[in-house]
Image 1 (cartoon, rainbow over the protein chains, first blue to last red):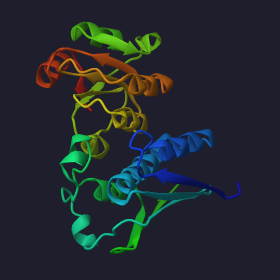
Image 2 (spheres, chains in turn blue, purple; image 1 turned 90 degrees about the vertical axis):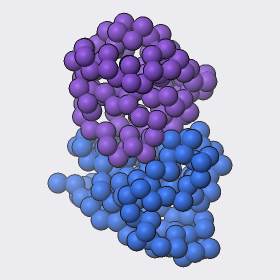
Image 3 (spheres, rainbow over the protein chains, first blue to last red; image 1 turned 120 degrees about the vertical axis):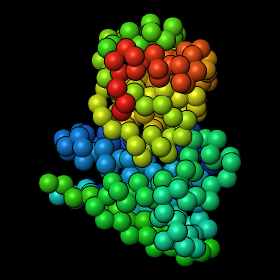
Length: 140
Length: 114
């Protein structure tokens, strides 16, 4: 199988469509007959990332690369950046305001969840410039 | 049990996907925080009980393979949210019961924690 690359623009102003990219990736992975458990890990982690981009960074871009043995999800935004990545990775830590919590998010579980469900995760972030999150999922 | 039985136990009204009422559900999860649903839900034949009615409840359910959403405290989402669920084959129910009561009734009837 040749590598498949997919790109999605995540609209930061549209909370209704947030999650569409992850849903499409889910459909693609299912169509490619990837194991259900792997699909589940990948889409949960990607969806968390998508939500993060919408609620914290006014949207961004999701690039997904699929091979037989690996799925790589790269999320990039030009948002305000993460000043302290170590702190952001702590379960329960969130800078989300009341408005976001009312929507059911901002519990400080996003990044820890993404780390939990992926096999490796790298965050590069510069305050005032943006954030890049790269997650890799190995397929047995 | 089937979603039909869940609806009967909770005196719930079906908002969409009536054709899927014979789907089996085994486990349930009650939360208003979708972050927690994504963090903790595990299992098959899952049902979500929530008081949140925005589109992300449906999106989250889709990601977690949740087949039925029960809106507690008499909540009813807006039409676009119902359409979103309908397109994904996710059954929506609404019940007047509050979260604790609804979870208790289902737990007593054999639904386990998801």
